[in-house]
Length: 581
Image (cartoon, rainbow, N blue to C red; front, side):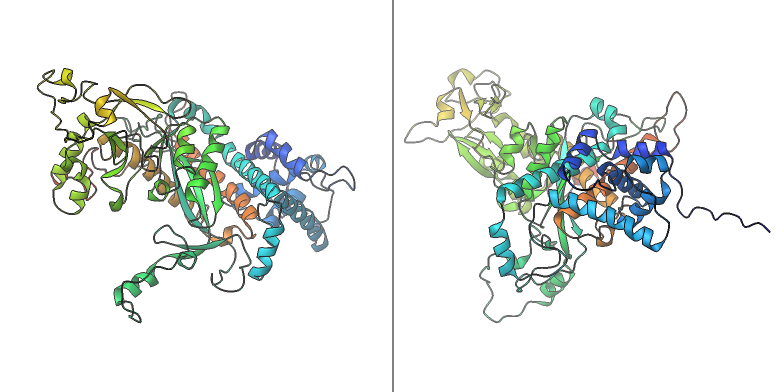
């Protein structure tokens, strides 16, 4: 009886699939940049090229829902690809044995960590706990310029991996995406056990921190102590203790994601049930990692700057309340300079008048005539305080429009914009602007308050110039609460929250689980997360493309059934209008 040869332990990968993986992982320029980071003119030739490592990691991610495992990558490169590809990647022939695997794994692991070292913006040692005093000395002795350069390389390289995943959607994005984007920071765990923040040591992943689902997500131990209104020694109530126990906490990072979505289309299918090709799926265009709650605005600006560098357009930009609470010089002003039009929601203590310039009042993000009636200014606060009902609130928001300053021209290169008095622009009647009186009896009449120093500048002139710094923290492009604001803000915010859940699906990428990225440090976590986000993008794009008819043939899959939503214009800060339910 003749013995049959044993079947291969690893499924063979065709050369065409290796080439495709290499092309899809990132562009040739990024591969060349990574190769230059670890290039040495002297010494032995490498037993694995950077291109080979990237191809192996991409093939591994495709087989394991975006997860990159170095042992699986080793097996793919050493025994699954053809001898021709191994020669191309300078991989020597090795037996499929313990010694052969260990030798191959050492090569893969060494090159992987050399790449990380060249991109790591942190000098702190990983995989062991170190004393905080030692960590402070190490950080103080570091070259801050070199660390900044590494951070830029890490951002550029990892976002190139994500950008490459958009290739199959590029033509649809170019035609149907206006550049509108939602930013959000979502927590992910790291492969390390957290330690007490007030303790003497750092964790084995010293770049991570504690996330708490309260406030701005920062670790309470890192915040300034606040005086308690309770008497000294008073115990927390049972409800307070229960809320504290139930608050979600994890040790890891905040992943700041930029998600593309065109809010002009709601995704409703055509009458025949086919999807609207203009409603492209929400996908990640950029990301970065940082400790939870640390500089959310600055991190979003870094991501969006790289998104624009790669040639993507700028449209509306929506974020949660953590972003419009940022320092304007770190988020609001830089993103407006990049071309984005900001759309925000507000906390209850941020409602009403937010700023003023030349007599004009900023009310919930927009500039208004100083004679705007007080009930219109306090409409949203009055609704929260149950002083008015929802229908009255909607009517008062609409009644603000005639009092709104009118743009005279587009902002200049520095962001300064000339704005017209609404009476001078024919929107309002005002006794201080004689030519406006009696022009149209349907227009509301302003009642400016007398002033001993004379009228404000906006009332004495037809136009004023508003500097970009004026009211920068709360400025937004749309009237708060208006139907246009509801359409843009909620569609963008829903898109980013949906993608967070999509990529955290435990049977797919499961980006929140620490076991999917088993290497510590911000560089390793960012690099491995890039493969997961790219895989989530491709999974979503492929599913959407399968629902589109091609060459007059029926689609391969049915579109996802949309859940019923409330009509635009029915939202209020305290719920939808009752008559629209």
